[in-house]
Image (cartoon, rainbow over all chains, first blue to last red; front, side, top):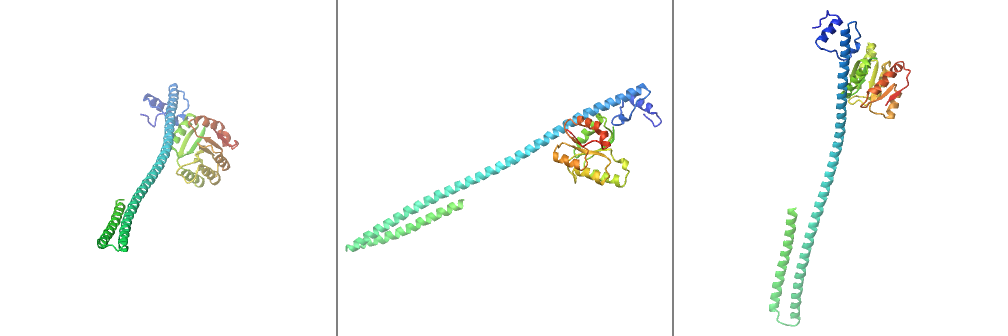
Length: 182
Length: 145
């Protein structure tokens, strides 16, 4: 081991024998010596230090470059994620719009159908009512026997009235059920 | 050879690159690297107010944008040159080559601007050649591209 009593030359010779080489900026402070072995050792230390520095510099630069590439990739990735999110939001908006349009269309079709049923039912009810009333009136004006026709007219009118309420009730029920399903 | 260098840069990897490049070019015997301009400000303040002034580095390299610091490299140079007695060779080392920023640095007394790149050694070699004239304040402001 190197002791505090060793001269610099002795210390360097001991280090050399153990194959221990001085590293770092300390090598820059080492100057020549009268001892050829020590000169060779110092020169070897400097060379080894330069080689390890060069190697480390190359590795560090490579790591630095890879870091830069990773940072750039992360930025691109983040931009892509934002773009994807925007497209997803847009797709969801369009889907919601389509569902809403479809719903409106279905409702419109249902309302049109209900309207048609009501219209037809009303025409039939009014038609039958008008026809029987007309027949009853003609019979009365022509002084014919109206006993059967009068009973038939009142019965028919009652039935038509009941049926019309039934139709209206059915329509309202369908409408209520449709609204409840939604 | 420069007696002592202080590097102020937030990027730890660049500390290693700079240290090895300086060592390979026999630029300096002593290199200290700091991560923030606040820390550098505190040290310069201490050297200026309490001393010893000899402990100040001979040359200072400052990054332009120091993440995590209260102020940027240009402001640090202004503080060192106006508040803490000047007396050091100081400049910017940055990957930016923004002309507006370069002009700002020049105005606050930066002596050089070195652009960081993958190959920093040739720029540092050119800088060493001009170093003595920076020390005597006889060299004009220069950008090492």
